[in-house]
Length: 316
Ligand SMILES: NC(=O)c1ccc[n+]([C@@H]2O[C@H](COP(=O)([O-])OP(=O)(O)OC[C@H]3O[C@@H](n4cnc5c(N)ncnc54)[C@H](OP(=O)(O)O)[C@@H]3O)[C@@H](O)[C@H]2O)c1
Image (cartoon, rainbow, N blue to C red; front, side):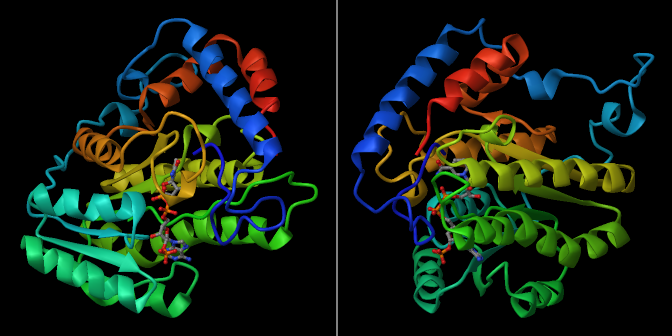
């Protein structure tokens, strides 16, 4: 996502309406897109094609082996998605159900969202079971341990504030870390032990391509996603040889409440969900999602300083 003014966490430096300085930032965002479009040609599928090698160029066995001992078929799997009340999470749970998942646990915080998910699932015959799940609440998180074996955990729940990190509300920045980073860590700590015991499973973290390079208008949000991306690498180091695959997906702007008011190109939740399902099947490693995300990574490879300079103009 590029910026967010509509959320409950975007308080001190923005309101639901797009302020003038944000409009300027959005024009600069347009320039950013021009910049990335001008970058060298896309290298599609970078993430799924690269090889992880040691300093002598030998492939690391745990990643090189990557075509899994446990071929990932969504059909028949049990999946848990956090933040499924709306946006990408909601689309994901229906996409997993449509792809033949045995059961999809859909985490939501509010009673009315749980009820709505229940009735929508019943109306379509989807095998979706809504559960109360606030990823900052230890009781909710611990309760997921008793749901039975989970094959795939999708850490999707997220919040975003915007503003100058030096002057925006500290509460907003703290909530981003609590949900986006510690929420994913809490969920992983709750569910990974059973995956390790069974020697199989997958953990999918939803970050952003701006976890790789900061977009200052949502600087603290990007920092929380950078922490999540880094955490995913650590989890992979500990889990890969034990049959658990960890990936962090990196989309750019998706058309959800989170990007409401941002006049930039947006991907549909359906497109992003389908890409995530594809990467799950392929057991990709930290894939960019969508053309812009690929271009961000391309810009980072070809001219990271120019990219940072361009992004530095996109401020609150
Ligand atoms: N939209 C974008 O442009 C974009 C781009 C890249 C990555 N992403 C990432 O994609 C993921 C989904 O975002 P979205 O665009 O679908 O946003 P969204 O429409 O704002 O939905 C956010 C979801 O997270 C849930 N959530 C927030 N705090 C939570 C908590 N403490 N515990 C459990 N659930 C919580 C929300 O639940 P409530 O309904 O209860 O608030 C909601 O279901 C996020 O991780 C986001 O950072 C989004």
